[in-house]
Image (cartoon, rainbow, N blue to C red):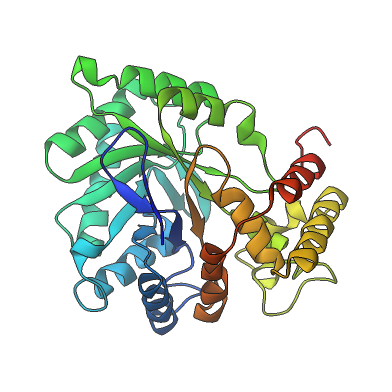
Length: 317
């Protein structure tokens, strides 16, 4: 698998990342182990998780695999902090004390001494950004984190945070932003991606398959064994089950038929090779699905097909 440098840093990660949002909840340890083995065998090295995933269970599962299924030195572990569920309600707390306490819990669950990439999960308008960023500086200076990034920030939020973290002022650089990006959701092209490119910040694309919709599995309804049928994900999938999405999915399927690829391969390759993308994060339900997705490393989309997909999926359509 090909590797790319993440932003303006020496950190190199595979251009396909392994997402673990369901590990420890919908994906048991046995299935997670099979996914990890398939990913490592394919040459991948970038594993993405978050403190909130499975209420910490995703990190615990990953920690159990370190130095058993995979050597710690072989992989880059990225996790996130700042989002929690209290009494069933999602909340954001980017205060310095809360973030650093969450970092310690992540390190404990993973069983590591350092996190390779620690990310602020969301912008918190109730906490001064300077306080939030001070947690990043301390996390690195204290030796608990190697690199830092942000997730789900708007363009102006990314620009403000990155400007305040200028290394000329002794601050630790923000090297990455993690954002949703797919043929069904290209909103980051308006502000986030231009800001990231100008600031030399790497883009980690989450949900490159449009939350699974771009695989074509929902064209005739919601399969009973799909994430769309799960109580955890029904509200996550439903925004993309509309007329505009159907038009784009149909175009992807036509392109796939013409090229002899699967819709998944076409949709994923489009994101993987989009300008500014460092890595596309894959979250599979089963190891078999993941192995199917990893075949995208063997293909490229012709320029004329990419142009047609660009046109039909443009934000203003």
